[in-house]
Image (tube, rainbow, N blue to C red; front, side):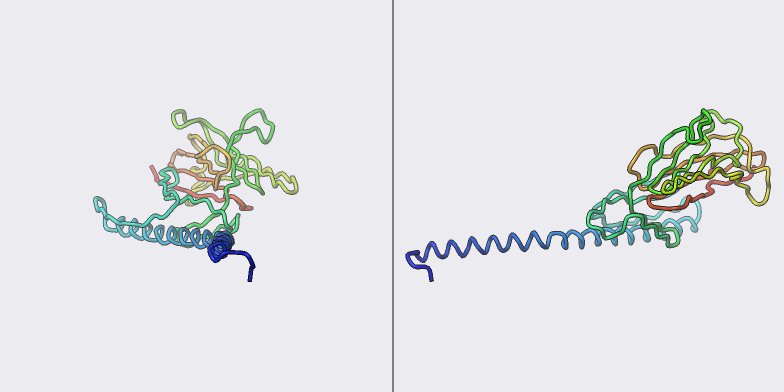
Length: 244
């Protein structure tokens, strides 16, 4: 027992110590609380995306003109429709490591990816005097041929779409001989007129993407080249294909 200290002062000292202890407990628990919150936001987004996917598919099966109204709960993050890739994106910055950088998981139409280390820009990678559309992440650097524009179709041959690939860790360079895209075994669909462009130019992107539009004698279609953050492979997707 402290001598010469009034009961009032003793009480004040005890309250002060309790406040400090509570503050320390809150500081230690903040990371745990934030991890739980982030996990809840991500799980909520996954459920929202599954709900949207199911609703879109059901509505499409019901025929032209059908509409469906749905409600979703959004606690955080950004939902965005990307018309160029026919996708709905959810963007949310993760600070407490609930998902490892470089994670890429595909379940049916749902893709879960983590990381913002991709870049999309123009540069002459193969030193031929002409710029390529460059898709880059921590592992790969890919050069896609740059041709024409949406308002200025030029001759295009898909065998030259992927002009160069550089594996950054070992500084190994690969020059593909043929990267042709052929629809239904018709060689004529691999060339014609068209253009190519970056879908989104910049740095610190979750994915770097380039679009190549081809109009051949038989068909017209889009090719989307995607390099996710942390991925050691290039994704190639054919969209909007239609025969003439």
